[in-house]
Image (cartoon, rainbow, N blue to C red; front, side):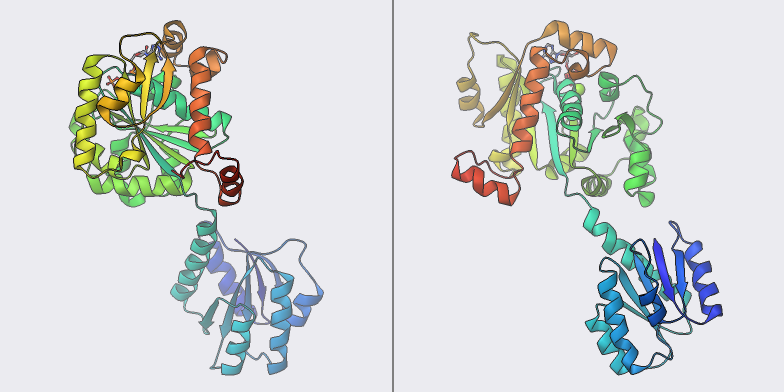
Length: 391
Ligand SMILES: Nc1ncnc2c1ncn2[C@@H]1O[C@H](COP(=O)(O)OP(=O)(O)OP(=O)(O)O)[C@@H](O)[C@H]1O
Ligand SMILES: [Mg+2]
């Protein structure tokens, strides 16, 4: 954080410089001015994030200068250091938008607390409000892992979104292998094991980065470790993931357990993946019954029919009628392209962009992102009849 310090007290300057430098990331004094008037006359070329004003000995009329300085650096947070109760000055300072007032002599812990508050406020503006989208296969092998990994890749590369995929397969998690040849250094259970450390940077460092905008948190591949995962840890991981990614895609697998349930509880939308076959329909119905009994809103459950071929005995209407949920999308059966992609561990969109399955994934990206129309655009689209519910 770049800071401008206004003080004529050399000792205070050294103290703040040392305390600031010891922080991670540091608070760097880019300039020091001895008086407010001096700061107004010698304007910095770049806006500082923080302006620290030593107000001890500040005359009453100088408070107006504070207001002018605040206008000069509108993006900066102001911190005032006062030696005695300067009531009148404090009121004027607050009018000038000073956010933090600290007593002198400087109490270091109070200084760091104030910097933490300022950093948190700055970060809060930058945090994402990511959506959690859960893919779950109605029956083993329906294609949830292929679709979730390739959809997440498409979302990052076509819609330019920041995407994280979390592989929740309790055992035999293999999501990374579908789109990457890198071996994961860290897994979901490693993150849970160090949950106290978690923040955006730590989470990102645990991912297999497929592209700069898309990373995968691999499943716990050691079943003994998987036992240690706790549902509360899932809440924390998803909260942090939402703050740092536009989309959090979950490959839930097939098993319903305490961890996957907690993940589903957190999901904004659930995409059960099934194929047009009776066993899939049967298992799909069971799954949706569970969702209903858990009180999940049916409109947030959107079916994806995978390996779809027109003209079969079972039709999409049958699926909707039998499961009581909307079929949001169909993905064509595209054996050659999908098998090539899965065998090579290269996203199908990268390997064969014009293939039917790649085109279908692009459409899915459009469908999902179109549902997140910002308010202003929402009105226009509503007027033209294309409005869709916010996810
Ligand atoms: N649209 C498709 N066209 C052709 N083949 C497909 C398609 N989707 C998936 N497959 C094939 O189906 C296989 C199983 O898919 P996948 O591993 O994604 O299923 P899953 O639902 O994750 O299974 P599990 O329940 O074991 O986790 C893949 O290896 C892939 O070859
Ligand atoms: Mg799978």
